[in-house]
Length: 590
Image 1 (cartoon, helix red, strand yellow):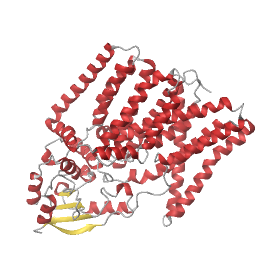
Image 2 (image 1 turned 120 degrees about the vertical axis):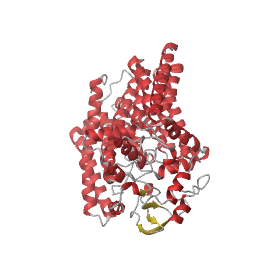
Image 3 (image 1 turned 90 degrees about the vertical axis):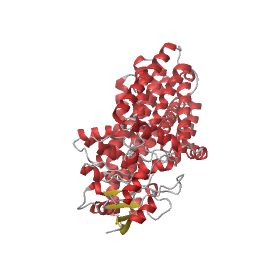
């Protein structure tokens, strides 16, 4: 047992969690071998892989019982069982995303094309935010794409799409590590006198990694999106909040001044941290210091002001148009936000239940602020998620809820050790019930998956057929509605990207005249588009306030010469994006 204070115990805690994570890698390889061996019988592959994992997962439990025999502790056995379960579920997740991560084209979700587009433009010195009429910019700040590119460049693979996605997986693992440290910090504040068994890291990190990748609010953290880095910044911001609440250290306060500014360049919603920190300083900080609050506000204002001035110097008004005006025009649907509240109920529930366990005694005053600020965090994210149908806005707040839930569970299981000697039968029953309840609840948290291949091998055929359509033509003369990997290779800043068109069309902020002119003048020798004949054509959706006119203009000036078949067995979450059938168009005069 370790006292659990200081940097060294934190390192050992992360080392224990890292060892558990590493042990999931050979298990993921085992799942791959089984699925490849029974590629023509996927149900049999799932059954065999599941049986093998169950047997392997039972080994640590059996080993503990054999080693300890009558001295076995129910809470320790619960830790072993939950840790083993976490490792198994992580291995299934890693196998499930492996084919997505390795897919060498940026067409899996709506955000991938502008993500790679920013990298392509940066490499050739093209402005990241330009004329709205070019439809080649992103509504997100550029930090995620540029940090990813820098890390890929350091690794010697600056144009590798799989490398970019692998880096997102790394961001998510780092977020789980920070969540593990948050869990430790919460328990230290809740009960400073109690020793923390550092072996809990074997359970904490895998489970928090699963929460950080749950299919409900964090479905896209392995894709090219700013979600993975935003979650890392968010959980780091929460650790700073907990650290300041416990210690009032000036170093923590300095970090709090940085998080909102840095966070903004990852995702606009991370500006919320400025308000959350201000509430902590104004209401919950003891002793309250007006000087500290004023200094914090001034530092954040100065940092953000200087940063925005630099953006204006680099990109002018176009930066503010893309990153502020387009989003402001989208609007929030309150009804959709309420639906998202119901959808994410399990994460609200574990955060609320954890408060009943941890907000007790002397810890009440110290932890009330951080808990209420998490509540504000998840409420704000749930409301803003009403802009669209996805729930990824709520991902960072869900991870914080997971931190509270894991800390509360740890306190409950650790408490069993004090009563097991007096009531051994009851202790075993309570520990067993707790472990079973957690195992069953994991599915409600959307972290349980089947050990099966999620992206069909047919995706490689689909990508190759797209690439063949570019052969013999300059890349800038071919318009592919989504996907920038070919333009990245060619050193081209492609225009008329469907995501940019959709962002502006949905909010009603677009002037489509220049794009329509390019189509009428038939400047593209070839055009590849999805859903050309459907009402929700990506370039001209019926959901927009008014038609863009692009669909009709295409039909008048181009003719369809062939189609590229959709990817077979497309996963449900990706079916509405860019793995569908493609119409190949050439100018009507040819």
